[in-house]
Image 1 (tube, one colour):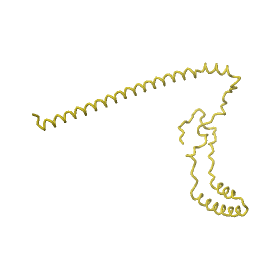
Image 2 (cartoon, helix red, strand yellow):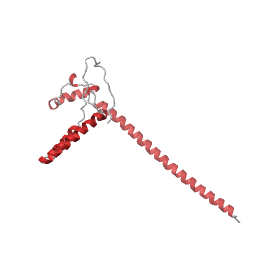
Image 3 (cartoon, helix red, strand yellow):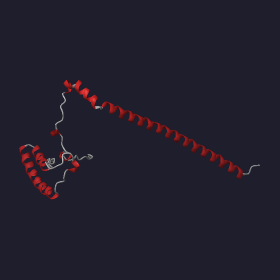
Image 4 (cartoon, one colour):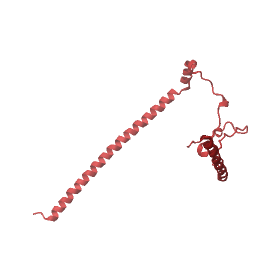
Length: 167
């Protein structure tokens, strides 16, 4: 008859077969998912190619010229003048590029503003106008407005600087 060792080996073989089957089944499911994703990617690439071809067709200069002539009365388009174009250096700075005010000047002006706002608050409360104290504090926190660099005559007009805009 069967000994206990034989029964243990039969159990181990059955468990191993079950684990092997589940691993094989999971691998087949993953392979199906990979094929499905590859088909989706191919469809998206084909769609992108089709849209690029459509854009090239829609933006042909001859077609745009015909449309401008056909709808000129409604659109009233004018050519862009060369003075309407600016260089990248002339654009205002981003908020992240605005220089931080000097700490020593800010402390001195803040102390003076605190004294001035306290005086105006007591005067305002006596007169019944609480908004003047807020106005005094708001004027002390004003930051300098960045101005675009002036366009120099010595600059090379053909050279355009480009870059990414980050905020």
